[in-house]
Image (tube, rainbow, N blue to C red; front, side, top):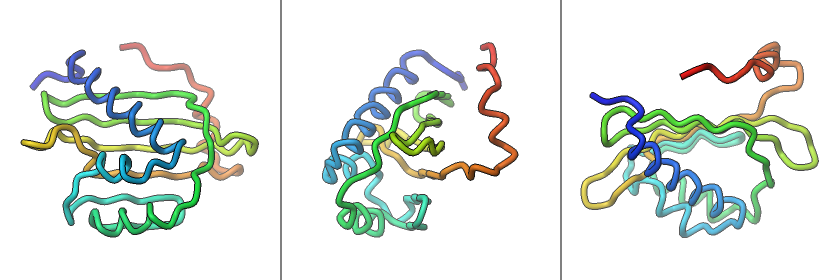
Length: 140
């Protein structure tokens, strides 16, 4: 298994960027299309726990707008030709709140890249883990 194949990383990054643009513009249909349309898809958000694509779709339909954010760091790792993990550290505009988002993507036969699992969280201001944010990016 080849880890961090540049072609796979680029493909995952394209989906990641498409998702970010759709999220900031609240393009619900595009967001829904990026997630795997399957009951096994999972999304843990800041205020919600969602199992299955239908639950994720219903949540997205209820959102009027997403908090705008600035990307601080993106890290993508691929595992073979069909699986990638994306990690985003971001700051919510105007609040200083630091968020984290992880997505597991898989290349689904006949569908292409889809998010099969996602987890979004905000870092508590008193979280001792906040110190880790100042660490330099590890060498590859």
